[in-house]
Amino acid sequence: MGEIIRGNYPELDKVLWDFHTQKIPAMLAFRMYEERWNFVDEKHIGQNERQLIDALTDFYGNGVFMAA
Image 1 (cartoon, helix red, strand yellow):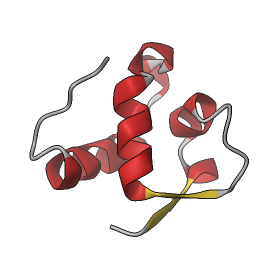
Image 2 (cartoon, helix red, strand yellow):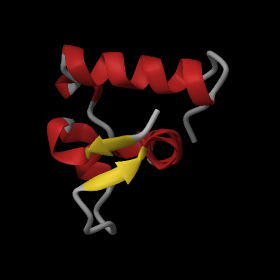
Image 3 (cartoon, helix red, strand yellow):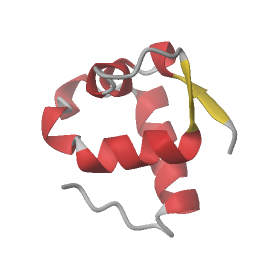
Image 4 (tube, helix red, strand yellow):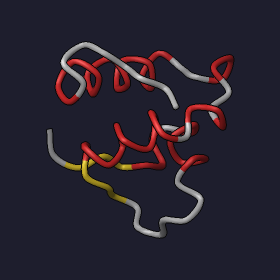
């Protein structure tokens, strides 16, 4: 899926507090969403970010999202 520009997705940007690059591999984005889901405010996930999460889940999670 390539790289994700974290600044385009506010909740992803928030959970990447210990990363300093602006682009991250899509697989890492999926892993961070799953591992740090407790820090995501679902009320603030916009349509674009929801579509990203769904696409990452389909591609890397085989349709299964397992929040830690």
